[in-house]
Amino acid sequence: MKISMVLLGLLFSFQSMAKSSVKIAAGDWPPFLKKKGLAHMGVGAHIVTKAFEKVGIKVKYRFVPWAKGMTEAKKGKKVDGAILWLKKPEREEIFEYSNKVMAETNVFFHLKNKPFKCSSSGKLLGDACMKEIASKKIKVGGIFKFSYSDSFDKAVGKVGDKDDSSKAIIKSFKRERKSILNFKKLLKGKIDIYPQEINVGYYELNNELKKNASKVTHFEVPLQENPSYLIMPKKNSYSAGVVAKFNKGLQALRDSGEYAKMLALDKAGGYSCDVYKKQNPGKVPGCK
Image 1: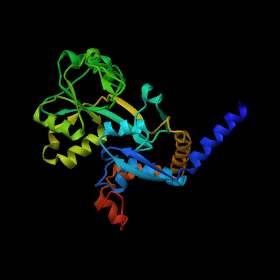
Image 2: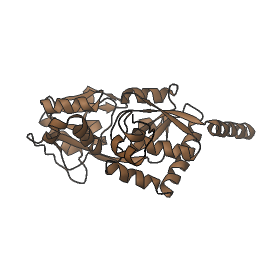
Image 3: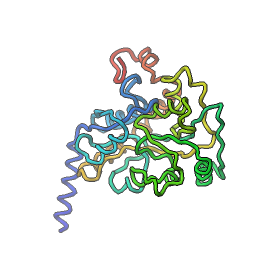
Image 4: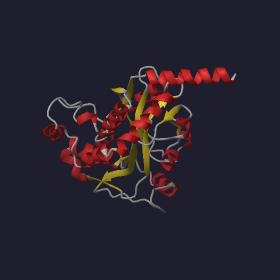
């Protein structure tokens, strides 16, 4: 029995060592991820690419809607994993999780001429706020399969990657495939608030809805402040080994100072193709 376990361990180790390339599902989520229009497809993809590069693994990205990316990552056939997903107990049963890739802050966006206030007893919005949203019948938008906070997920009846309306207290909630659709609905008054990562939200507003971006603001108390990760399905025997190698590459990226420089570049708007190519002429992934 011990011999067979050792052989199995060696097999898994060999499979992860032999894996010289991976295909990763990603969704447009600028400034972190974007197939076209950001250098290296955004700072999130750049970090993942460089971390894998440190351990001799090449990455190809398959950009699809977020819900589809999660579905494909679970199956582990078209892709080997997905990036920038949060930890949830039900997902931890299915996926191997890397160390933290990035940190995210989710807030409620709303129109300036339709002020939004919500109770908070601490640094984050909790159950009290969700009950207020429900009682006031505030209309809320979201993206399919996205998790925004434990309190919010519970309030909309989120179970796994689906919503169960019978368990929801917030009834006026509807998800869309893309984030930008929610901002368009917000501007038209079809929804009152929309939860989104703060950097992602303002990027979309300032780049895709410039004429109306000044009409939108956010509530200062966040819903959630959480890290995001690379995930790979446990059903694929090589996943654990590849994630372990990725973690080594990610730590090397931090230790070298490159990770901090990437985040600083992103905050300064340096991943814009025009800005990036001035400093780095030549062919750049994500840029024309």
